[in-house]
Length: 330
Image 1 (cartoon, rainbow, N blue to C red):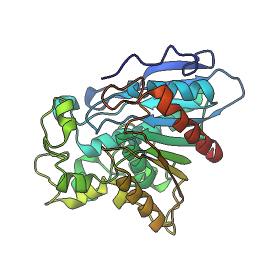
Image 2 (image 1 turned 30 degrees about the vertical axis):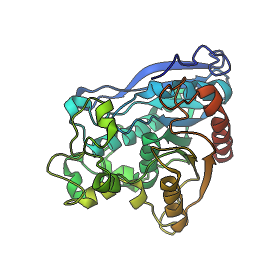
Image 3 (image 1 turned 90 degrees about the horizontal axis):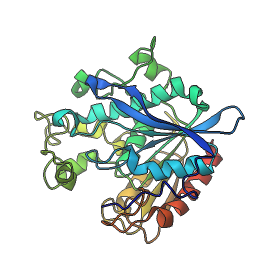
């Protein structure tokens, strides 16, 4: 599906400009090690803004390495600490991971980063999240629902999320009360933001969802066999960013850049625009950009023989726009 990544191309990956800590274990829920790669500028000028990256893959495939070229390019050409993060996929742990646990992994990674990133020259008070496709969805959940915290065992009751990592002396209620998951900016690239409708009308929990095939996993309910979007719509909506956008009078969200790809058949432009409109309807600040003549997953590493994307040709122009936006926010 992919040719060799561009990791040996100095224009994309100049290791003279950064140091890297590979596969840092930041949590081990139920014995499953969650890791991230952390890129730190070699410059010695104090601390740097932090960009946290979440990969896509329909919550069922891919790992952080699919965005290696993106992380390498940013670390090589910009003064940022970059965290490229792994989270559990639905098919992990014998196909038992629930969707709220997956979101909890993302929440936990932000808590770990804020507690530890100073060791890697990062400034926790200048932190942005980004991701493509499913990673954009995950980033949106951090932005919209980072104050909705509760024990994972009781998700069906309180519709909140338990982070997979919790700093010592921090209680769950402290995360909500002190807004400990707050970020300063977000870039959401060609993401879908409504799992409820995908499950209700699009067969997301069946073999109609081709990601189950690609993961070699048996389709199932993302919250367990006893739940479905018809009988428990509130569970699916609570985990879908589009239903959890606060009104600006109640909570002002950070600046957001949301992108789409004009030729995208996985997440069509209209679906991304629906989310942009939902943000605008709540008075939130959002910038929208449609990448002309591009397909889904244009930020992926290397060359894709499946959709014809090429990181060097397609991703770099988009990353220049993304980094200009982040520079203006951080």
